[in-house]
Image 1 (tube, rainbow, N blue to C red):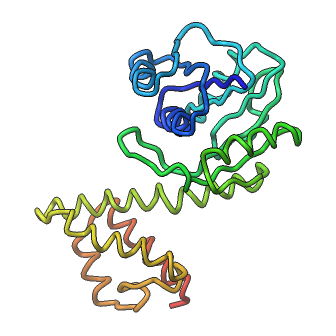
Image 2 (spheres, rainbow, N blue to C red):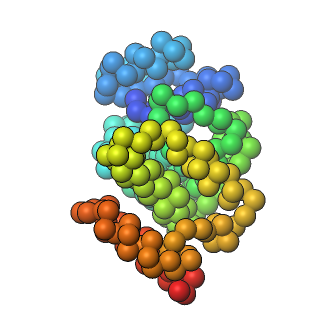
Length: 249
């Protein structure tokens, strides 16, 4: 099966690397950023181009959500399977007369951070059982966690991921702003962060909650509010209100 990856960003790089490590050949990596394509091509020994898109049996589109529809329109071949890697878009957004699918890896991707691909869940959706089988088997070459998923379920998977990853990372960034303002090394907080994450492997998150909000420690809550301003203060109040509401305090 001839496979082409379209994109040159974080997801495209990691998909290409995941396939490469499993000796799944790629016919091409195609995109608009020649500099990034060259880096990927040189590291993984994959032909690349910004101009000529090769004929393939499967195209995997790894671009930003707002570019998927436009990029998918460049695929003129009809007898092929095209899958995007978005968690929030339906397969029908793909703009062409080919078989459409979704190949969603549930992970946060950065080129500079190595990943254990076998632990990344993949969620598969296709128009027919044969295409679903093809994508399921391809994902299973890379990962030990692959499941079929409708778009309706995938929307909630992506929403959960935003809460569990993007929002949490933003709180890390805000926390670092506070520690930096007081010249406290942020790496002193890393053991706490590690323990917080490791704890939910053994304890349900709701049962693992600690801190002044769940204790309804009004004195500490008021003290913290006095130390904060602007967006961080609003985040602090919103988070504490959510915690107290969850525990009916």
